[in-house]
Image (tube, rainbow, N blue to C red):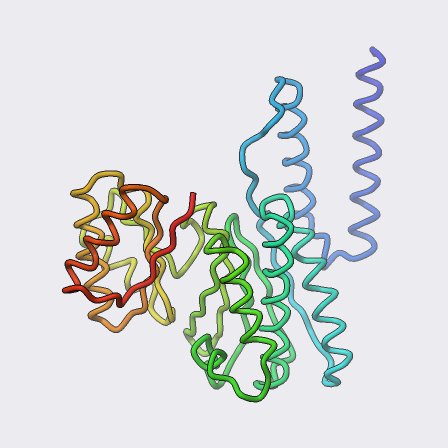
Length: 289
C-alpha cells in the first residue's frame, strides 16, 4: 500500500469509529441515515477538491427528523427547546447553506414557535423535520393557532418580533409559512434560494398544465400563504400565465407571495399581476437570486 492509501484507510477507520461513538452516545439524534448523509457530503467535497474545484455548488440541507419532548416546567422547557433546536439545525447543515445572520434569525423563529406552542397550546411533543430546502416544525393542535393568530398575539411579543426579524433581516431569503391540516400544525421555514422543492406551500408554474396546477392548489390546502415561483419563467408571455394564476388563487381567498429574480422580468411580472388584478396590490412580491 502507498502512504496515501494507508492514510485514506486510517481516515476511514477513524471516521467509522467516530460515527459508531456518536450512534452509541445518542442514537435518536445521530441516526444512521444522517451519518450516511454526512459521509456522502464529505466524499463529494473530497472529490471536488481532488478535481481542483475550489468553490463547490450550493449545498442543501440534510434530510432528517427528530421528536422533541418537553417538560411541563416552562424554564426547563425553554432550555431544552433552545438546546435541541441549535443541535438539530447544526446537524442538518443549515450553517453550510445560510449566512450567519440568516442562521441566527431562523433558529430564533423556530425556538419562539416551539415555545409558543408549549406555552399557549399545551403542546409537549414536537416533530422537527428537515428536507433539502426547508426545516419544519409539526405538532398536534386542537386550535390551529397559526401565523395570523401569532401576529395578533397580545400575551407576549417574542414570537411576533421573531417573525418580523426574519422578514427584515433575510429580505426574503428565508420564508416562514404555516399550514394546518388533519389537526396538525406545520410551520415551514424555507430557504427560497434553494427553490420550491419539498415546500408543501410552494407552487412551481414552469412546464405545468392546468390539471397539474389544480393538484398543486389542493396540495396547498391549509396553507396560510402560497409561494408562487415565477422566477423560472423568463419570457413576458409566461408572466401573463403567472399573473392569471395568481389572480385565481387570490380570488379563492389565498394569500400569495410571488418569487422572481430581480431585474426587468420581475418588474414586468409585478406590473402584469397588478394589471390582471385591476391595479390591486393584493399580493406580496419577493425578489431574490
